[in-house]
Length: 308
Ligand code: KIV
Image (cartoon, rainbow, N blue to C red; front, top):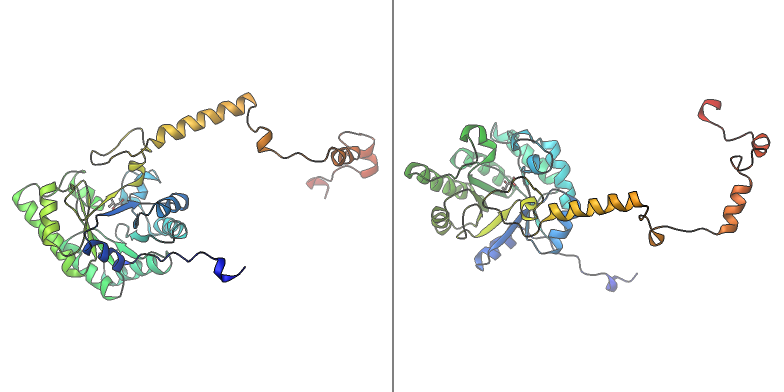
């Protein structure tokens, strides 16, 4: 095949591309992704940032919190998302305690998510408390996205999924956290469950993009958990999520129709099978000891494992 017939390879977005979107005043759409086929669809749909969030633990692996997610599990899913994309910037969430214990371990784990996983950046939770960690990782050449407001890995300390920064003291701390993340060198930060006026005020005071989830329309961009956006769960949807489709009922209806077709003998039909030359079939069956018992003596039958 001549080279001219190959379509040009898509260029993968980098943090410089995200900085350009931000500078151009474009609102940035980010989604989580956990698997190859979904990542492919989201990439083709033009979503510029895919986050392999540790929400993986709850929405894909069935854990009760993100605290249970391990480096091995994250890596498994990051690799699948990277394989499914050619254009999106893939960000890897750093799992609980894979950072923040020692700077050396934080850097080593961030490095593994990049070099083994193939991510283009990492994300970690915490404001002032994580600033040193962010600085260490960024200094080594790894782009970091911050995450302040509700930080789900601290759920046992925070006591639940509550809106953060609502009091004078908590609001001031949240602003200080966002500034600390920026100062430490993060290229962007998530603001999760923050009152919308405070999120807008923080966004105005930063010179890096804020990506909101439950933080109102005044952020530089938005992130949603893809299974919420697709309506995968019949049981629970957070208040801040919008269903853009109802995959739960679509998949359920498809599974019910399939089950019925199998039971009725309506699947597979002629279009889903393959037919063979009847003469060849005849030849096969002529020598079959099952169809002609006298052949069993000639051929000695089909050897079974126990006869070998
Ligand atoms: O893990 C995740 O999905 C996240 C988003 C909610 C930002 O951190």
